[in-house]
Length: 358
Ligand SMILES: Cc1ncc(COP(=O)(O)O)c(C=O)c1O
Image (cartoon, rainbow, N blue to C red; front, side, top):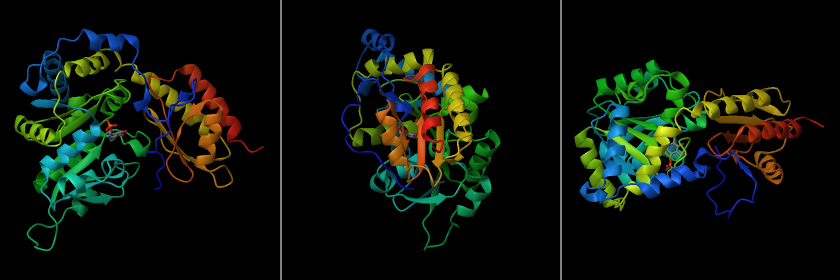
């Protein structure tokens, strides 16, 4: 897989409909106002009332004892890995996982952990694949498996939703082997809204859960890490160690609370728009494949007689749209709070024109 981006590009030209990522929505005025009005205190001392209210809500939502506020889902994931594992240990995850592809080598750098990647389907792997990847215990040559990490929804799997029985099957294999489990639920609420299965049901059997508020939920900042009280105590210390301690964080927690109260149900609009884009793409001659589109992420491959991904990105940019190239011919389109129905209709028309042979 080749990756593009991560380069400083400067501001987008005005008027661009930005389908690159759901991390790119700009917070509306009402959300900003919630931050201005929030009661504040020192989070380091547990004195910030807005952060406390927010974390209490998140822990209850996920069915966990406690939760910790984080600047980003990346930090939440990386701290989870470092709490669950010792240097030299091995973590099982999918080859396409965010934790291995987009977190700058964090498991190796921060936790001394090596990844044992399995080839799932659309970012999801089976309990049998976990069982096969476990290192036998007691062999002095082998690394010790100490963690299995899953991603719900699976970003590079096209926002795929793990079926509940598969998620629980993976957790059961891990529990039987005495190893920890982490759920990267950066987009867990997309799965919840789509299926009606609760966040706590999806989190059951997972020792730690990341939730991100700056994706479809529309906050400009904020993620959480949830787990047992003991796990969160250890995570707190690691967050401190890497300088992630917060102060009057109610300012930011208020944005996330606003998202929880106002922007969960509307994720359904994003799903409908993504499905519309996917169904248009499926009929186009220069599209080789579209991954199954269950939530707000559309991933498709351009056929070999079409433009390259970089060429299509450039052409779309010139026509007022931003999308992502994630490989020579692979494109990702993400719907979110910052793009509306009109943007979606116009993008569909433009894709139809650009991906139909002349
Ligand atoms: C599945 C997944 N996990 C974690 C992250 C990291 O989120 P953040 O940008 O808050 O660090 C992302 C970001 O896209 C993601 O898709």
